[in-house]
Each structure stands twice: as structure tokens, then as C-alpha cells.
Amino acid sequence: MKKLLGLGSAVLLTIGLTACGTTTSGKDVEEIINSSISASEKMKSFHVKMEMEQDIIPAAEDAGEVNQSSTIEMDYVTEPLGMYQTTEMTMMGMPIEAETYFTEEGLYTKDSMSNQWQSAPKELSDSIVEMSKNQADATEQLKQLKEYIKDVKVEEKEGHYLISFSASGEEYQSLVEETVESTMPEGIMPKELLEGLKVNKLSYTYEIDKKTYHPVNFTVDMDFDMEIEGEKVQSVQKMKGSYSKINEVDDITIPAEVREGAVEMDDSAMQVE
Image (cartoon, rainbow, N blue to C red):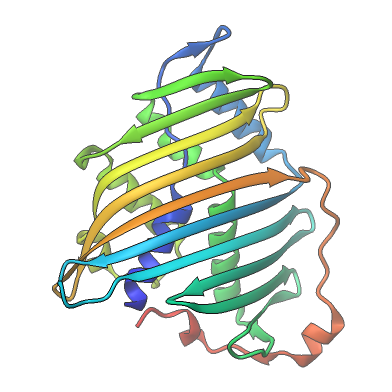
């Protein structure tokens, strides 16, 4: 079941933006996307808050449904590179909290179950930070998904462009698989999970500031089936996120008590059983 939860969270957090050739205010969607990519690449820092709900429904009648909800807040600074993230999660009625720091000094994390700060090995910390950055920043996904410029509605709101997308079927299967693989640390995602994944429905909205082209907020609703070790399940997920404090987050430093009190994390902590 940990595999199912891990894949569900990965897919939910890594879906990017897809758009079509519709025009608005004399600008076509590809131009809006390119402008947003350019603006996002120049952002020096930002804060993002993501709220997620996930229901995993086994096909077997005698198996119980798994419900998971979480709230993630992240401060991210590009130079010097730094990240501070808090996570509040409820899994099967059990609350779990986690806190993570990352700078050039390394990555340190603590969860409410162990209540112990741990330092991650460099290779592992690099992978975790890259995954977290990709989850919060759609820039790379925007680049990958430009080839799917179709089937999307674009509206102008007061001060914003609102892009909405809805799709289903095999046409988007490879897109989801590639996105999951590109945003998960190497060795985390078992190949059989991707092979057994079938997307039933995906809908997405993405709001862009008309003046700055910075991201404002987004929503993702996704319904997919998967099979692992012969068990078929359906996963229904909803996520919403919002950006703030763009170019306003101060440099991130790791408190001395965190560094001095941490124990080294085992690489196996990130392995999916």
C-alpha cells in the first residue's frame, strides 16, 4: 500500500500545464506559456501552499478504502539555494507532521513520528530537493507539455489569464508516465507501477498574472487506475495550490540546534517497499 500512496502523491504533485492554440488579447497560448516560463525562470524566490486529498479505492470488495489529505507549504530561494518546507498529513485518520530545511550545508528533516532531526546523504538530499522543486514549480512541465498545445480553454479574468484543460484516454498516458519519472528520485518509482497506470480523467486550471506572467494559483483533479502485485485500485485525487511572496522570501538558514542535534538518515528511508 505504501507503493500506491507514493505513486498517487507523485502523479498528483507533478502534473503541469497543457494548453491549446486559442488566442486572447492578441496573444496565442504558446506565447503566454513562453512568457510564463521566462518569468518563472527569473524568479529569485517564492512561497507556495498546496492542499491535497486522495482516495485510494481497491477493486476487491473486502478491501478497505484509503484516504489521505495533506497541506504542504514551501519557501524556495534560488540564490543561495535554499528551501524550507512544512507538511501536515492525515493518513487513515493518523496525523503526521514534517519539517525540512535545505541549503548548501545539506538537508535536514524531522517528522512527528520519530521527533528526531535527521541529515540526508548528499545524493539523496539532491534528489529530494529536485523533486520538491519540480512539484512546486511548473516550469519544466510547461516546457515538456508545449507539444500538447490543444484542447484547452483560455479566459481573461481581471488581471489574470485562466487556462483550463480536461483530457482522458491513452493520448496522455506517456505524458503522465514521463512526468512522474522525471520528478521522482532515481530508484524510487518501481517500473511495474507505471506500466499498470491508466489515466481515466484529468482536469487542470492554471492562473497567470497578466502583468508579470508569474503563477498565481492552480487546481488539479485526477482519476486513474493502477495495478500492482495483482491488486487493482482506483485513485481519485484533488489538489489546489497558490503562490505568494514572489521574490520576497529571505535567505534560508538552518538553525544551529537542527544541525547539531541531527542523526544521519539511512538511504533506505526513501526506498518504496
